[in-house]
Length: 433
Image 1 (cartoon, rainbow, N blue to C red):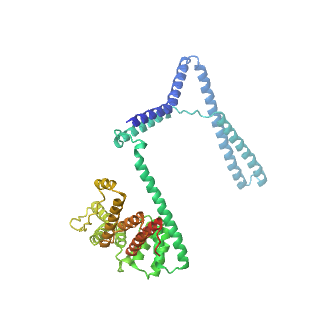
Image 2 (cartoon, one colour):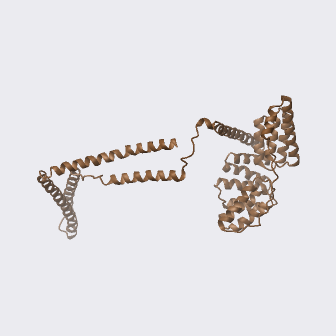
Image 3 (tube, helix red, strand yellow):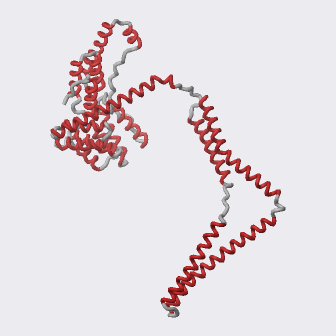
């Protein structure tokens, strides 16, 4: 609440600074009017003289304008005299020059008269408008704050947000490290592809790295090379189409649509094909076709697919927007429950352990994670935790082995491979070619 009072006081102070000159000018104007009213009897003659002077000025202006009209008529008359043969060309030229000289002199006199007697400016009418606009903005701002603001919310001193600020800084540092790793990977891959341009996996990883860096226009070249080398494989066509779409701010142009339609006729199961074709249907205004595509895609997806919630949300939003009934059509499989992390009691118990007991407990947890990944290897986050866990406990051999196993598991998913390579580089492991 304190901050609201302070901001309100500052607003009123600024309003005073803005409005004070306006009221001062009005006050001075009123004083002048009073003085004029007091001297009204003695100034009647002066006002009459001023009126006569103004009338004289207007008469002089009218006379000069009439002169200009006469001079222009004389020019026209000269042309007619030439046609009738009254004037020779030499005489007409001399007469024309004389008339033009008179026109220029009249113009100069008019301009001098305008400068000598400028029209008085009256800004008095703008003052109420300025005050009204300022008051309107002030009341509007207060109304918006009352409607959208939270005046009862307690203050949050900077000292109480230390953990939040540190988390943001850590996330920014991790993102910067990730970008540096990806940039190094792009540089290394580019050099290797110059030496060996027929390396299809190299082109795939280069495209995925560029996409992760937010450079889809450059990724198009890499994916197009992979499409050519693979004999137009459906998976690579889907990657190429996605790079085109992201480079065009989500619009599905004719080239991207052609690549997606070609990929749909192949044996590729890449979910991007049907997802982006559904977006193309919506772009054409065919919502029912898009919903049909997406429902078929969602119903046939693995329960733990990372993209599944996004597709389901798209289906629901499109159906709600168009009033399409989808009740009973979505039969999405339930994802297996996630393994819970350590409870508060587990943490307290770990703090009471000896270093040897704590190390044994950590090793047991890591081994359990490794066993779960054997049963469910399609878990990229689990592999990343396992690789990092082995590195933390100092078992670099198992960390390298886990990284290579994950690399084999996700060999057909370049974005995941790029992330795994970045993690391996961060931990100092040997990158798999």
